[in-house]
Image (cartoon, rainbow, N blue to C red; front, side, top):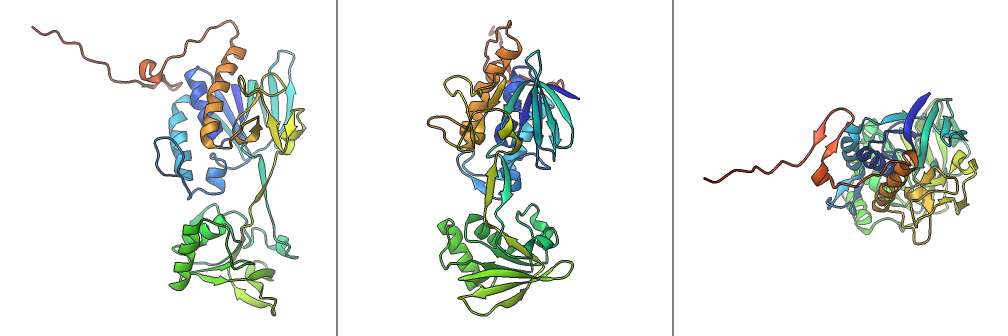
Length: 351
């Protein structure tokens, strides 16, 4: 059994930053995430997309933000259970918790912090009869590694930011990119729409609108897609990969069965104090929670994590008094023996 002070469910930006704030309080953390790597949506959905509202970073790629957060918390030696979903929670007589994953891994913690973003995600799949037969055989709903498509023929379907952004990005990776959308208008950022138009005019992207993919051709893997344009007769486009990007549907998953107070697919918390749920010892921070005036921003998740850790410390050490010190004054001591501190002023006597 894995034992820790704070068990964090969700290894996205909010969950990762919680490790840092807990580390300042000498609290150890372990994180569970259903994804195979840390970073949440930033790593899984849009690692190459820029974020503009992170303090001190006029622009930072979502994947790079994850890397920076992992670097920041390294000295606090967090543990990770990745590729597993938190399934059940049991409150013990001593007010601690045991959380078990779908693979049977048990975690024992004094405090549980749910930082699961918008919950688990399921791709919105187009109504193509045989699409399930080609999943992981040329049909992908999420682009994890762009280099996977190097030198391949790719068909992307969709009209939002993801479809536009990945069409643009893959023009420098794939041998050919075809973008199919059922309307002539796109819902994405204006500069992305303009960029796709430029690439189309330059012959680097084939764009087919208004059109829909209605079938997939192939035996053991995708060899082509069947397309109908303007209500005409179906025609085949040869391709190695078909990537329908119609967004993801968020679901709380098993967490929704833990007895927590839920409102509109989010966990209600006490935002007047510490973001604790209706179950003492279980907190919810980041996009997964809701309260009056809630804003689903990474910045807000960082703030919530900070206050939550202060409350967690009081719960774990009710007889201790913690005096907050600024890191510029007290420095940062890692569990690995490292120390970060500002250079001391040199006092020199003048003769």
